[in-house]
Image (cartoon, rainbow, N blue to C red; front, side, top):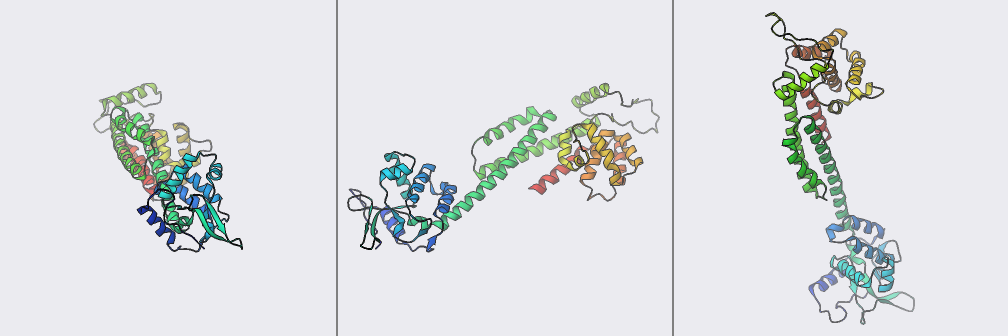
Length: 391
């Protein structure tokens, strides 16, 4: 006989919660049994926020489940467990009785266990002559059987949200790193850092998926602004329009012993314009080039640690792309060896789209001779394409 007590023990009056508990106790189970009670507890641990539970609540529920004799939950009298407070506290790692009562009440409020109070408030079971349980008073685990599908669904949603949060956090961290690196290189700290710091501070907190998505969108927008500023700076540096960057280029020219002299005013009217200093490294970090065009690193057995290694790798790759020695020599003469190596790295990365690498390189060399070429847009285009593919 399965006894379901309606009224609470002692002076507590009947409430709507007791009537709801009675309704839950009498609801037919959607399945005859749940094969693994501990799987339900694991799902509930993942989805505890959806049920308003704490880790201490779950520790008490785990102790209650340990008093259930079988590994599965079947719709029978054994679902009512009746440990004493002392026994339950011992299995809850020595939890104090007052604390134990508080967490039991939380489990009842969450609708995960039911109370079946005896006439004197004690927890026990009455057995017949054959040893079968005729009536039991204690905590009923039947709600776990009834709500197992709901708990599993909530756990799946929680796991999906956790995976999405991890993806967004990774995307956000990478965007913040790129912003910080490009900000330093482009000398944009005064403008960018006041907007970057709040994003970094927000990342220290535990954020919801919605908050992380909002932060990731803000970071991506800021990264695009910084990239545009970097491209503009690159163009100005190559054309010599920006005074600050022009000074940097002049310093590089003074330190270089291989740059070719350019004597404006001494050239004839029909002379081609003198190209910019071709030994100065391109106005973008080597790490950014390798991030946009990582395939070039496959042809450097010892890695690419500086521009010299990039030029050496480009010399190895040039014949594989079908670029003639004349075309490569022209590119090195007009662009400089470092810029030519950056361009060849981009051509290698985009080889599937470029039908004639040699002709393409010659066209870029002509633009460089006219002073209208910078490798920055090529690198940034590859970066945007890779990020769009990853998203």
